[in-house]
Image (tube, rainbow, N blue to C red):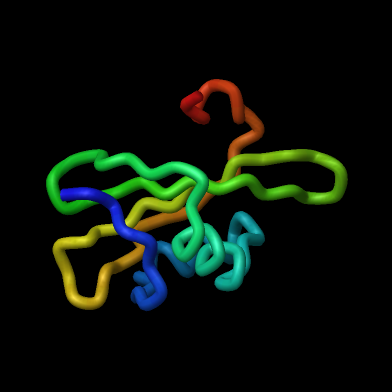
Length: 90
């Protein structure tokens, strides 16, 4: 199953908790899902969406995990990583 760009989705309680703890806004997640730089199927029904994100002058990669086998798709978790080179595929 390919990972389509998403315009509608549900944020799980876990995702909301982790986003608040990591100071990631709903708008950042929505932008990454609507216009991802890269996607990858992690396992059947779950996709990873990646998009660049900056905080101040530091460039990060925002990684959002989504269960697509639900209607609407559910965001499982989201986090930023500074290890852009490790996770970004060429």
